[in-house]
Length: 418
Image 1 (tube, helix red, strand yellow):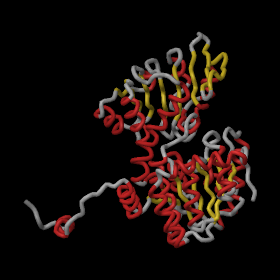
Image 2 (tube, rainbow, N blue to C red):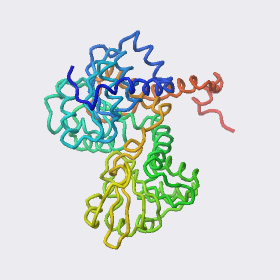
Image 3 (cartoon, rainbow, N blue to C red):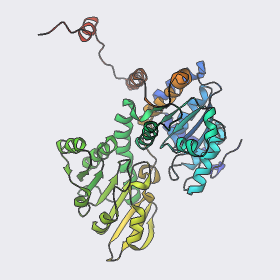
Image 4 (tube, one colour):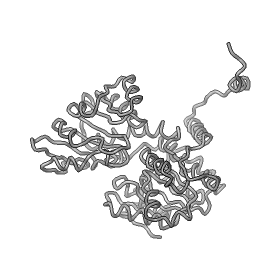
C-alpha cells in the first residue's frame, strides 16, 4: 500500500485518540452498523481531501465499513494530526497522504496521489481536490459520479464554477445542511477557535477587545464564546443584514479600520480575501494577536504584513511576532491558517458527528442518485438532514413531540381560519 505520512510508529498513540473521539460520535456509529450490513458503497472508490483528525478517522472507518475503497489526503498543510495518519495506515489499511507542516508542493503532490486512484466520489474540504481535477487532472472526470463539499469557502468556489458552467459533476453541499452549519460552524468553530487561540497564546480573554471579522455561523459562534469568556466583542461585516443581526445580538459593529486600533485579538471567518490588510496592521496596538479561522490563510494579507515589518521571529509554538518600524509587535497565530487546527485539535467530536454523518449519507445518496443529477451544487436532501437530527436527539436521550393527525391536516389545509 502506497502512502506518505510522518511516522508509522505513531499509530498506536493515534488509535487511542481515535477511540476517545469515537465515544462521542453516536450517530456515525449507528450509520456504521447499517453500512456494515448493507454495504451501500461496495466497490466505490472515494478520494477524500479532508482535515486528517481523529473525527475524520471515524468517518473513514464508516465509509470502509460500507464497502468503499478509500484514499485520504490533507485539506490544509497544518491541520493534519500525524498520529491519526499513522493509525489509519496501520490499523485501517487506508492509504493516507498527509504530513503536518507540509509545504505547498508536497500538499499538491498529495492531492495528485489521491486522484491517481481514479475516484468515483470526491470528498472535499475547501474544493482544492475539485479545482485540481478541473484544471490538471481532467481525465479523472471520466470516473466520477459525484462529490461532497464541507466548507463555506469550498461551496463559494463550487457555486462560482457552477454559475460559469465549468463544474463537470454534481456536488452535494454538506456545509449547507442544517445539521452541519447550525452546529459544526457555530458551536464547533466557536469553541475550537477560542481553544486554539488560548493554547497558542495563554493570554486572558476576559477584559480584552475581541474583533470578529464576519458574522456568519462561524463568526456567530466565536463571538458568542468570546463574550462568554468576558471579552468586549466587536463585529466587522459587509452584509447589512448580518451586521444588523450582530447589533441586535448586542455586539458593537464597525468597519475594520475603526476596529483595528481597538482590538487585542482579531479573528477572520469570512471565506474572502484580504479581510485584514496592510493598513489595518499599521493601525493595530502593540502586541495585537491576529488569527484566522476561515479555510484559507488569504483572509489575512500576510504579504502586506511582511512588507511593513523590519523583523519577525517565532516567540512560542504557533506564534510568529512581526516587528514594525516603530517597534510595535503584531503576533500572527498559526501562520494565518485555521487556528483551531493549527494550534489545537479542531472541533469537538460530538459536533463533527453530525457533519460526518452528512458526509456518509450523502455519499450513499450519490451512489443511488448520481446518474440522475446534473453538474451543479445541491443541498443535502431534507430527509437526510432530519434523520441525522433525530438520531442525534435519540443518542442524547432527548424526546420530542409528534404531530397528531389533526395537526398534520391543519398544517396541510387552508380552509380553517379564525
